Amino acid sequence: MRKTALSSLVFALLLGAPLANATIESESFENIKDVRALQQQAPQLLSSGLPSEQQFAQLKQAGVDVVINLMPDSNKDAHPDERKLVTQAGMEYVYIPVDWQNPKVEDVEAFFTAMDQHKGKNVLVHCLANYRASAFAYLYQLKQGQKPEIEKTMAPWNGELSNYPKWQELLVDVSQKYGF
Image (cartoon, rainbow, N blue to C red; front, side, top):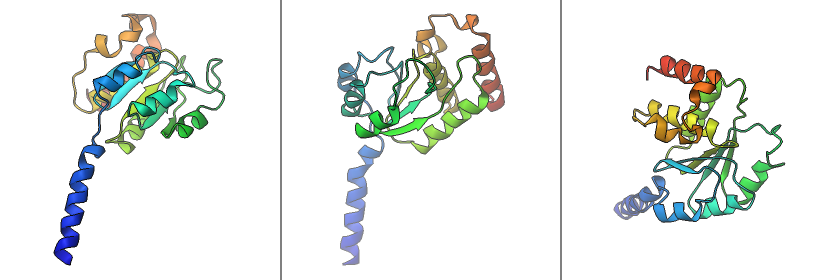
């Protein structure tokens, strides 16, 4: 009896293992490519601009488990109740409002914490136009020991990071704090 229970547990764990590290496949990515400024940053990490209300259901169908919103609710383009849209679509919702004019190291650290809490899940991080989101995705990949190309990862910036000194400062401050 004990051997059977142990075998069943091992079998269940083996069956569940692929689900624990599911990735967003390229065919699923094709179904959501109309999401504003969408980028696949890593197998389990997407960044984008603001999805439409209808696109949240498409994101869920494509395999997204968690949506991290970096855009303050006070933004005139924000959805009135994004949390409800996301949870009704069957995904988890994390809200980390990042002030475009004054991004803080603490904002990035809150993002790192959220990513660590959702390890093994497919995550979409978004803001309005994928500027904040791609910058945070870049820093997270560095924290994970990866070597992303800044031009590719932060493509929505169109090489204009130098026009945003607060964001340059944030990248430097986080990189120095974490030794990237």
